[in-house]
Amino acid sequence: MTLSRREMLKAAAGVGALAALGLPSSRALGLALPRTSELLMRPIPSSGEKIPAIGIGTARRYDVEGSSEEMAVLKEVLAAFAVMGGQVVDTAPSYGRAEIVVGELVNAIGNRDDLFLATKVRAEGREAGIEQMEESFRRLHTDRIDLMQVHNLADVETQLATLREWKAAGRIRYLGITTSFDRQYEDFERVMREQEMDFIQVNYSLGDRGAGERILPLAADRGMAVLVNLPYARGRLFQKVDDRPLPEWAAEFDCESWGQFFLKFVLSEPAVTCAIPGTAKMTYLEDNLGAARGRLPNPELRQRMIALYDSL
Image (cartoon, rainbow, N blue to C red; front, side, top):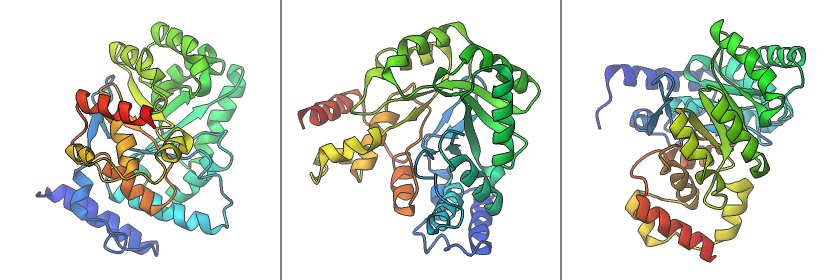
C-alpha cells in the first residue's frame, strides 16, 4: 500500500509528537505507519464528512486522578490514537473526571485538531444546560466541540433548542441525542421522528441487538449518523465466550480476536457510523482499531455470528 505525501507527513508529525512528549515511538508501540490511512471511514449523512468507524469511549476508564500512573497510560493511548488515524473521542460531564482528563491530555499532547471531540449535556432547564456546556468547553480546553449530545434525553426539547442556536453560531459542529437504556427507546424514536439531528448514540452489540430492530433503521431513514455505545455490553460478551477459541470462519472477515469479532458485527450493520468501545490500554487500542480494517461479515456471516453467540 502506498501512502500519499500528505499521509506520510501527518504520520511523521504524529510520531514526532509522541517523541516530544516522551512517549514511545510508533515502532516501540508496534504501529505501522501505513495504518494511518487504512481505517474504514463512514460519512456523516447531514454533511458528507467522513470519520473513522472506531472511536474511543471514556466512561469509567478515564475517570482517574490527575497524578495517577493511569494518566500516563491514557496519554499514550490518546497520542497514538491520532497517529493511527483515529478521531472520535466521546465523553460526558457525568463520567466522573473523564471529561477533565480528556481535555487535559489532549491539551498536553497538542492533537486537538486531529480529533473529533464529542460530549454531552444532561441538565434540566435552559440556563443549567448552558452552564454545564460552558464548563465542558473549559474542561476540554477548546473553543469548538465537534458533537454535543443530549444525554439520555434529559430535558431533550429544551437542550436541543439551545444546541441549534450554538450550531448556528459555530460553537458546535453537530448535535444529537443519546441513550444506553432499552426502556427509553420509545421516547428516543419519538424525538428522532420529530427533530432534525445529525447524530444519535445508542447501545448495540451482538448480545444486545434491540436497537437493530427499529432505532438503526429509523436513523438510516432520517439521515442520522449513529454512534454505538456499549459494543462489548460492559464486558458481558467476553465473559460469555470465556476462553473459547475464535471459530475458523472468522478469518473470512479478517478477524483476529474476539474483540474484533464483536466490533465487526456492529460495523457490519450499514446504519452504524462509528462504534466507541472503552479504550484505556495500548493493546486494546490496536486491537479495537483492527476491527476497522479488512473485510466485514456479510449478512450470512452475521446470522452465523448471532447463532454462535446465542448458543453459548
